[in-house]
Length: 117
Image (cartoon, rainbow, N blue to C red; front, side, top):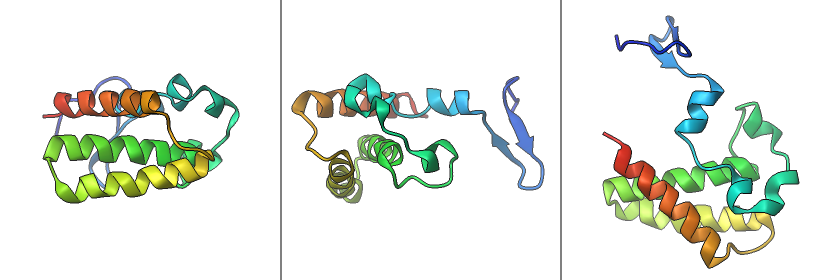
């Protein structure tokens, strides 16, 4: 079993490492409001409670993750999925992402992909 950091716990029933929200934040997308300031006042209770990823913040996380996956795996299907998830995000946001916003998000996701083993 891997050595655990202080903030990790083990779910012995499933024998997997569970991380705290702080750990997940380090391994997830940048805060949406750091790139899209007007999203700061938008809530996504399902995402906060980790119930679903269908609200604005959940789709933001999925978009970042699929960009990172496509960069890491150099996978055509993942690249095709980017357009689908981006359209979902922009619909939830109520507007298209600007070129600057898109560049910031993709840069972060691609840098994350490079850090993966």
